[in-house]
Image (cartoon, rainbow, N blue to C red; front, side, top):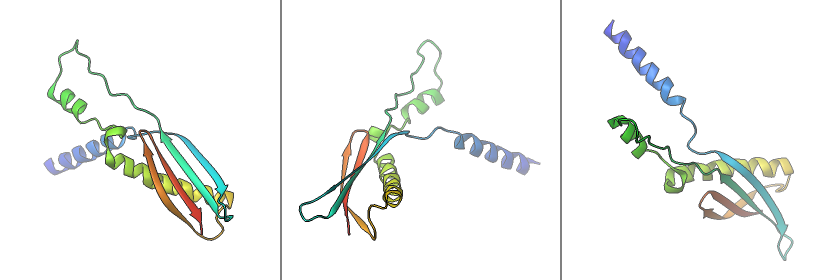
Length: 128
């Protein structure tokens, strides 16, 4: 019986943790295209995320250790290289879909440059 209770608790905690909101929210995607002097197709693709405010601590109520720990463990996009790499991977997927949808690069393309700002990533490249 204890095994079933343990399995149920693990299942319950797993479900509770999967309900968490995503670590960032994409609020803008933009595609730019141009030609260079030789007539080669160039592109830039920008993906921006919405700034997320820190969870506030209510100082009027007694704080538990878990409250303080949860506040300390908050991961914010501007401070997290892991979240930035996740967004970069997602931006590449969005770019591939955008290029296919626009039928912009007939065969292949390459990304030459990745530029970061606080809340956005820009992928620059060319068609091959």
